[in-house]
Image 1 (cartoon, rainbow, N blue to C red):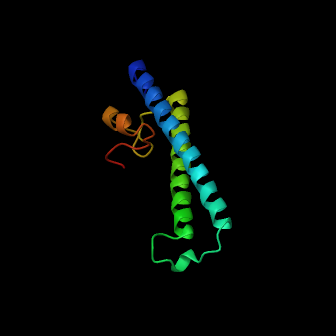
Image 2 (cartoon, rainbow, N blue to C red):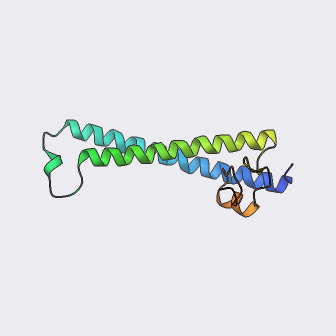
Image 3 (cartoon, helix red, strand yellow):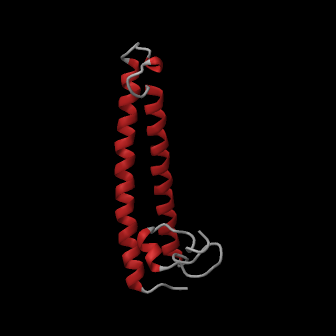
Length: 117
């Protein structure tokens, strides 16, 4: 199935926008993680028993989780770009039916149609 050029052009734009956002999140979260790690070396406080707020370990784990999510999203967007190039973009990888344009607009890296998702 070949998508109309207007659909692929829109998909390319959406993927590029999502890629830019994910890249920005990765840069921000990487800097945040670096700050957390640097800050933890500067203190000898026992934050594990501090009743006021979260611990350094919790903050670090949270940022690492968000960073992993952003990197996975970037990988999915790269895979979507490959599907655009090879002509399989917009085709459900499970059932082989077209993925709705509304779904692709909302989730440009979608691999499955709404029924198979």
